Image (cartoon, rainbow, N blue to C red; front, side, top):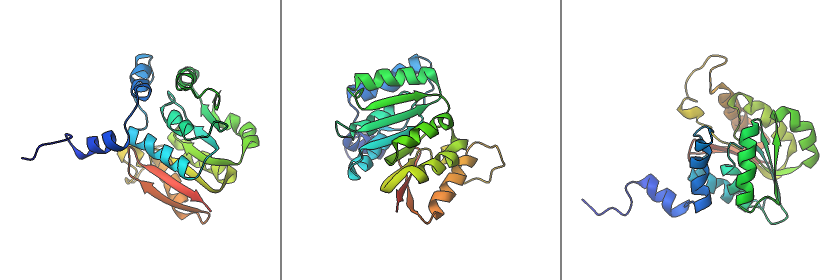
Length: 214
């Protein structure tokens, strides 16, 4: 048996290409201790979001769904000092935790958390458009609604990205109306066929559906 530098390929990929600093490493354990669900993008997904934002020189980013701010920190770190990052978060407790984490990351000057159902904020948010990047990681059944907004408010050359594009491992199954991943199925089919987008899946974490706006 060869000597192992890492226990498996996934650990190798994460440790070499997407290492977390102390702040990122502590976000979800601290959030879970405060009663938040143990769900978040993976470090690999976070690094991918950071890379994509950097590649398009993003200056203004909109996020649907904050949880504890983990993905938001990766994305906001990709912005220039005068960049702008807006998170829409329905849960006041999650928003409170997210704001504290943004502040701890030194990103309070370029981040904003708006609390309440995302649809209630869209009229105001459109005044901030166009966005360079829109990241969707909120309630899955509303993904098509968030896509409608992103299509009208993301600049050409910008990106629309959705997390959990694998439907928690069930997106390939035939589902009835109301079943969990159906909104994601609709989302994936729409971005894959939309004439104004070039889309593909990046199979990191729960899969990122990445769409370039033409």
